[in-house]
Length: 185
Image 1 (tube, rainbow, N blue to C red):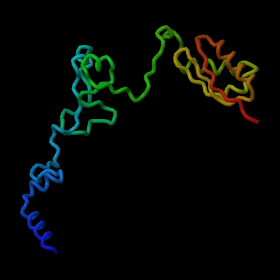
Image 2: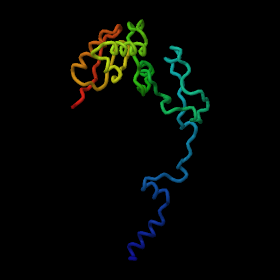
Image 3: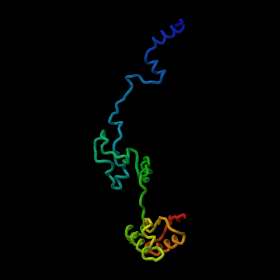
Image 4: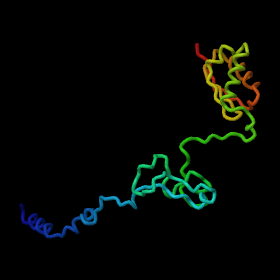
């Protein structure tokens, strides 16, 4: 070792540990904290003022221990979050949209049969019509309110036209969405 290196090494040995750690950007061992306190843990949120006013006073899991995460599901909201855009605007909270799309039905369609009944009526009408009777069981029919979605593979464009004509005649159907495909061949 040269004399310069030896002098530099001795000077480095004399530096306090605090200065070395500060230069490296590390915290002192006494200032490091690997233990999470119960205040730092996520826990169920409490109802906001708006939710109490609306009567939604019970939110979050039944567990009252803030240090227990047993009652939290992955889709539960935390403190400062809401899935109601009105509450988010009124309370200044973070809006977290729902994970599943909401099912919205027209208010005027309440007198119609339930979705499964309407689907059954459509399938029965398709079986009763000579042009669509053989296609009725090959189609997937979905209903939401008065809107019907028809999916499946048909032999030709004339089959699609016949299906749409029969579905539109069923009472309670206002809109038909055609998602059929013509078989290649």
